[in-house]
Image (cartoon, rainbow, N blue to C red; front, side, top):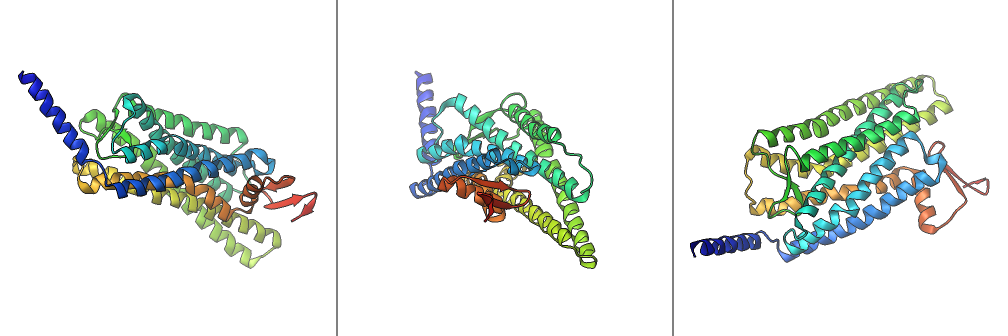
Length: 338
């Protein structure tokens, strides 16, 4: 009899806690609407990026292959984790069971790490291209190896997140399943491995590479001012456009995922694992900004690249006959320049 009463009290407490963790209807509806729009734009936009690169041989540059890799990771985010986040916001709790909780936690880590390492390899590739224009260390085979390495490391990082050093579960007051908060030596080892290999090291490499690129472009610009040629001016303009486009992609990624990493770092440092009212609202907001990033890149390409912009128009307008190239940034139809 005592055991039955104890079970009833425990069940009642869990129900009260679960109810207290639910968000207000206005908050849930707003967040779900934003994520739904973001998911739609993510799926459509990144599908167009992949289609443009695959369909047009002139768009299959080494940089665009990396961008296609990034688009695939973003597409997976919009297709799988985001719908589960929307459902959790609407229902107020996770309703899909432990197996799907583990799968979604794996996918969140998998896509995020694949994106970070793809951005890191993009910076390395462009740094060599700009600082050593007369060398050609990045053959197609090496590019493909780097793309595969990003996915393999993402798979390894996500795997140790769901099995081994830690585990994934749903925490009341959050919009997604995620790894447990560090609380013992094993979980802290996992935390620092992930932070070092997927945040600190890639960020240091990217800062160094973009710093070198910026310095080299400025130095090249000074040389051209003394001995200007049309060919040199065109080359410099292409280098600047590529540099700033990729820099904007990186900056957008950092800004969008900064709230999540700030939130996660706060919990680790303070060891305040109890879901306060602030954290209960900040968790879905932090994830929302991270998910929105997956919809941003196709828009950036459209604004910065005439070739991608023309490719999008071809898909949306169902037109054909265009030769689209990211090398010369020009389109032809029926052998006439347009």
